[in-house]
Image 1 (cartoon, one colour):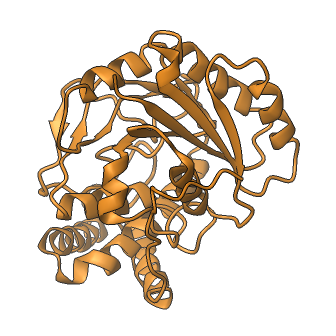
Image 2 (cartoon, one colour):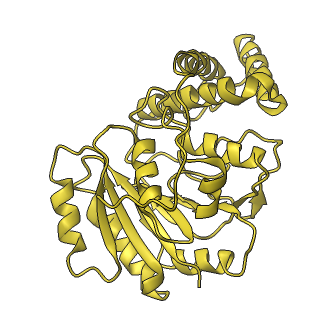
Length: 309
């Protein structure tokens, strides 16, 4: 049976950490528990996050390790977790999520017996129905990324599973991307697009679910979040798109839709008051930020040299 390492990065998450950790324990109880480990990576918390993690570790039904990455940046924390993981499959979720009880049973069913690596992302439901319907993915049909649609949102970083061999082939997360870094977001999109270009399949599966308690109930909160997403998308375009037909086409279409909106056409999302103009402006900001940070390299992941501190 495939073994699984769950990498959970957290910064000042004292209040939310117990919910996600206990959901990992519950989901692990449906499979051979020796095949699931949990790595909690503290990313420079200033509250009681580490003490909370230590309390949850005591009498845990699965192996739990607490790692520290003091330099702010979720990709630094994720790479730290990858470096210490022992599982065949590395699963990523966020501290404001809860895993479905069948999560690991679904995951192992998909990966068992596979030889070639496949990246998979699963269903993301709203955890709180009073939150606005954003940062979720509830498609009922499985899908394979074919390099036609934009990679953003094809799978979500809060429900992402990656065979460890993938990191050996393409390296870790680009630490310029994601929360806490200059490019703010888009870390999973950049990684899966890099994997796609390396010939690694990307699958969306409609089960293997997590519930996302993102807490955003006002349109202004959604606009602020979407602005950060578009900065990440702009950086993705600057990194890959200047010589990439797919991303160049999407930037062209975004520009064309903005011009149509300016002439009275529809917004990007009328119900959430998101405009094509906002998308384009933030993407241009993301491009500029990437260019100013372009000399930073993706760190290689040495899977033979674990870091457990």
